[in-house]
Image (cartoon, rainbow, N blue to C red; front, top):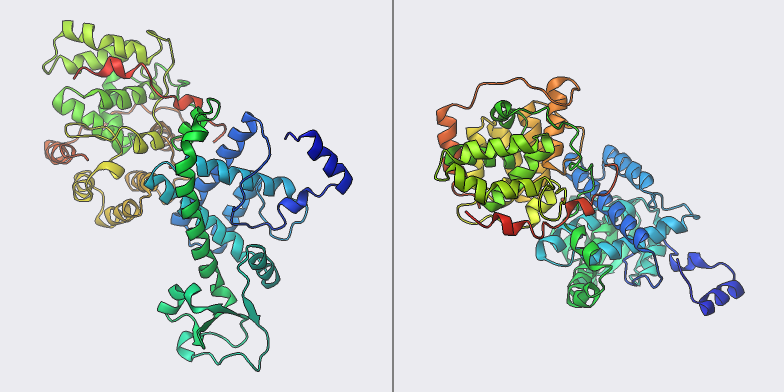
Length: 500
């Protein structure tokens, strides 16, 4: 952190009053940070908050929000990532500072599209709800005053309005007097008592009013941030970081091939059924059926195969043997496609060792068009076609319903995680899914009892399954270290994949 000479002098004269910047453990993030931080801290804060919001999303679907298990797991994550986790801790300036700055960094990254804004608002609201519910009555009043949302607490028992029994409020609950316009959502569902244009809200329901206010302010702030984003992106130091944050993957680096050479071409068909995520299983079937993939599919699937251990020589043999079954002869393959495969492996061009695509990159970039098979089936497929595909893969009706509910809620990675549970017959995956190669690695660990790769062939899918899946795919429509650099834009590589 850097200060001007004048600012340092004022701090010495006034004493260390840095706690005045964050007087409360909870905030609406209305004032952007006004200090200088290093790029390393900028990236570190952003990645940690992104990890936290991913956990918030996962827990919100896997557990009852507000339940003991939900709260315990979220508090563990807050402590691990060094965010404030208890409202009553006084000496937590560093945690509050990190919380404040990291929120604004992600606000810059997630203001760029409606989908990103929606996801960011939802996770920030869930995090805010958890923190607000941890406050005592006294701290709630202090917080409301801090954000200029002060309401009068009704403490005079003789003036307290009588609660209607059907609403179910206890007379022992502390209540807050709130103007009707601020409590319309609660009024519509008969959760408040109305008297003289005021509603009387129990402390337990006050979070709904505060959350509504938080959502409104954050939504407006994101819209304003989007307008000013071009000025921020003109900074050549920040622009690459911001562009990658919304697509970033925060898990292991799958460009490091631990299983290089352990996968043989003969096992790919069996592995695609047992251990490939749905996106890669779809690409593999399309390749086998059509003997060709367009450039988006070749990039996504080719880098995945590289990540699970296919060597360059194996990759050249695999793609060539499949393409020559179609309309591409051997000479055309060698001239038009072999170079791009070697480029994938860092043997041509800039010699860049390209990284397999993460889930976020697949979901948010290069959506498939007619005739394409790449992308995320949970994000880009029509729900009815996705349902047919899952039925063809023998997913139970109950499981299909669960997956489609997650898709409806735009929890695409969690839908894939549910697909993992159903196809591997486990109740809990034990991991948070962020990468197709992670899916493969976890599947192999499970199937082989801890070994990296299991080479046990299985029967190929029958012709009826292939036909059903073919009909579906023909209409195909967010860790140890950060890997922002590993999720590099494949500039220069697209040029080698333009030939269909």
